[in-house]
Image 1 (spheres, one colour):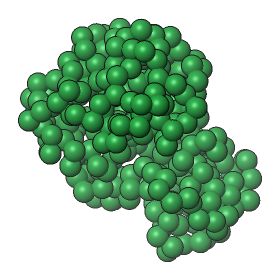
Image 2: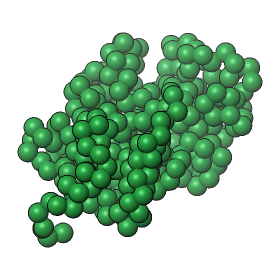
Image 3: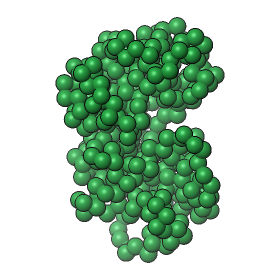
Image 4: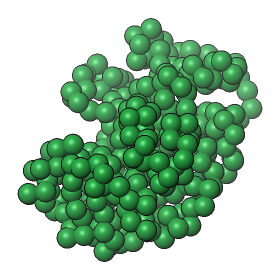
Length: 314
């Protein structure tokens, strides 16, 4: 099977490097591929990591078409991208690498692929991974989800990448989305000086929220205990390399985030809060994150509200 990656941000580029390094030919599509094709490096998004010989770069979308296409575009841009390019992408296996819930439709990436490009086969690649680790060749384990994930598992596994397979698309996409929201909450706690014990409590109770929301969406509960759920949460909610955690830290400290940094959890928190409220599902940590981001609550007020919730069994 031929393979291409659409989107040359840090993560898309790192995947292209890692897969090509294992010997699998990969075509990386970028709107501004000229410099990368010349320098054999993405100096803007992922400097310092040379492209292997098996990695080709192009600005021509038609030239980047393959049997399997990894969509490394931001979550909130995925629906528009698929609508614009569905005719070209139709009939292929489309593997979304973004993580989140669409703010308008409340759909995850697999649902959006199915809705916007119905002749394509939807799939997901998710799990605990930082672009710099993947590009550096450090060991990374991910989950690939599809109706028939085994061919994708064999295609994408190699070198430092080890893939586990799942058929639970809803569970994998929900875990990947929700962990960003809880990572913001954990960053808020540390940034505001509430302490590591508070972060541990938010991580644990946030994981319960993730499971509650995932089951409501139709996920298998066990999926959230794997790499795309707990594994990704453990990484994202504890490391400053995580953009969502770093955003929470900055917000908790009253500092601005750097311009141009994509924080998928911001829109996802609002989408999840709205969807859960309509369904009557309690999501107190998610609601707290939204209220703090919107300036409706201070972090102290949000903490007090969480602590004052009725006592219950774990």
